[in-house]
Amino acid sequence: MKFLALLVAAVFSSLAASAEPPQPDVKMPVIDFVEYDLPNGLHVILHQNKTAPLVSTYLLYHVGSKNERPDRTGFAHFFEHLMFEGTANIQRGQIDKLVSAAGGNLNASTSFDRTDYHFNLPANQLGLALWIESERMLHGKVEKVGVETQRQVVKEERRRGTDNAPYGKLFEKLVELTFKGSPYQWPPIGSAQYIDQAKIEEFRDFYHHFYVPNNATLVIAGDFEIEPAKKLIADYFGPIPRGKEIERPHFMLKPQTAPAEQTVTAPTTPLPAVVHAWRAPSETAEDAPAVELLADILGTGRSSRLYERLVRKEQAASGIEVFPYLLEKGGLVGVFAIGNPATPLEKLDRLIDEEIAKIRDSGVTPEELQKAKNLKLREIASSYGTMQSRAENLAHYHVMFGDTSKINHEWERYEAVTPEAIQRAATKYLQPSGVNILRFPMAKTEKK
Image (cartoon, rainbow, N blue to C red; front, side):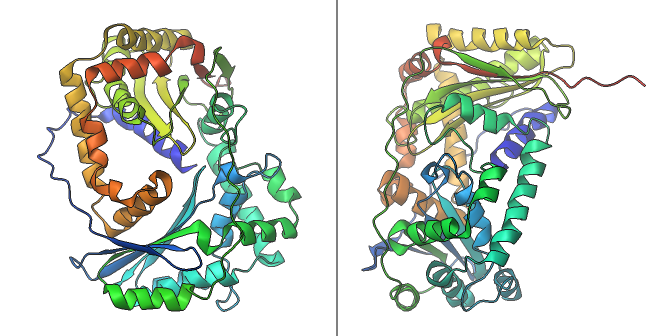
C-alpha cells in the first residue's frame, strides 16, 4: 500500500539523514478559483493559472473503503482499477493510450474516504480529459472480462504490497487494532476473498450508486479559459442524470479505555520494529493542528525528541517516524521505530513511553514548536507547487471541510497553536490506556 511504502521508506531514509536544512522564507501563494454546481449535483472548481501551457483535471468521488460492507471490503480500491478498463465509447485498454498519445499522464488512488482520478495534459487537450471522465461516469463498463482481469490485478497488488513485503501487514494490523468497531478497521486494499466472492451484479450496484455526479467534485487547474471550460463541462457532464442520495456511514470512534497489542511474525521482517498508535481526532477537528505539530516535534528531523533519544543517544533504533493519519471521521497518530538487530523490542517500547510521558508532564519548548510550524509551513507551500497538487487540495477542502476557501487560510490553524495546546493534545490523546502496540520480531535466519 502506498501509505506503508512511504512510511517504511521514511524510516530507512533517516539512516542517512544529514543535518536539518534551515527553513526558507516561505510565502504562501493565493489560490484564486471559481466554483459552482451543475443541476445534476456535480461540483465544479476552476483554477486558472497560465504559467505553463499545461492543464490538470482532478475528479474526486466521495467514496472510500469506509463506505464498504465488512463482508465486501476492497470495492472502492477495485473500482480505482476497473475505471481504466473502458467505456461504451472507449475500447478496452485505450484510456491510457489516448492520454499518452496526447502527451499526458494519468493516475488514480483510493483511501478510506475517497477515490480520485487525475490527468495532466497539454493545455489544448482539456476536452480529451473531460470526455474520458464523463464517459467513465455515464458509460463505465462493468463487464465480466474487465472484472475478472482486475480481480487478478488487485490480488497480485495485495500479495506484493501486503502479504510478501517487509512489515507488509503493518498498516492492516494497525487499523484493525486502532479503529476496531468502525468502518476504518479494514484498509482500502481490502481482502482478496471478498473480491473473489462478489458477483458482477454487486460491482454494478456499487458503480451506479457511487459513481454519480452528485457524489463527485471536478477540478480543473492550469492554462485554460474559464467560459469555454464551463461550456465543455456543461456539454460533457450536464446530460448525466443525478444519482440517488448517498447514504453516508454514521459512526463515532469511542475513546479507548484499555491498551491493545499484537505480535506479528513474518519471514520478511529484516529488523525488529514496534508501532505505538493512539486514536486521534478527525482532520477537521479543533485539536487536529496541535496533533500534527506534536507528531513533528516527536519524530520529524534529527533534533526531534524520539530521534534524539532512540537513534542518537541510546542507539537503540536505526530509524524513527511519527505519523498523524487524520481522516474524515477520526484518525490515529503513530510512532514507528525500527530497532537495531540486538535491541529488545521491550526497550523500544520503554523509550517511546518515556519520551511521550515527558511531553504530557512538562510540555514542549517554544523553539520546538516554532521548528514544527516552519516544517508545516514549508509542507503546505510545497503542496501548491504543481497544478495537480492545487487541484487535489481544492477538491479536498471542498469535500472534507465543506469550504474550498480554506485552501488560502489553512495555515492560520497551525499558526495559532500554542505550547499549551501541544501539551493538552498529548495529554488527551497519547495516554497509556489508549495505546495500540504492534511488535515485529526480526525474522530468524536458518543456519546452513
